[in-house]
Image 1 (cartoon, rainbow, N blue to C red):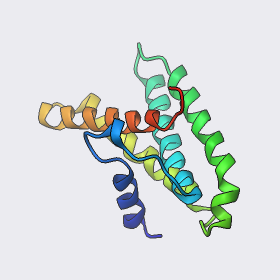
Image 2 (image 1 turned 90 degrees about the horizontal axis):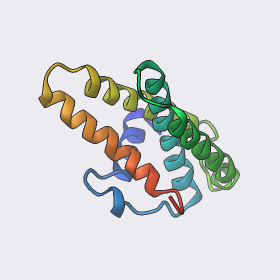
Image 3 (image 1 turned 30 degrees about the vertical axis):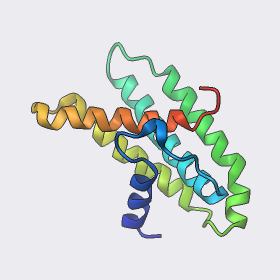
Length: 136
């Protein structure tokens, strides 16, 4: 899967403004990719929390670890369904980089027209991930 196809898939899994209405991933492949993206996003959030005083990284670290475990649990089924073994890590790394860029823009942009949508997008993506956790 090409980089642009992976990014398109990530955006397809997380429509803006519909965090509570996002469909749960059904197939093992969809689950592996969605959980990988969420692990990456929470990884970026945890790292960012360490850099910014007053933000505790504990919740983001716990969520990152939870999604990493969920990927591990579904990965054998996803690979049997045809998912290349390296794709989930690629998706995780790309999602982490994308989320870090949003957090950076939201925090350090001097223009509110750049910072506000970046904050909204970062919050939205994490909310979509939270919606994938049963009982959360």
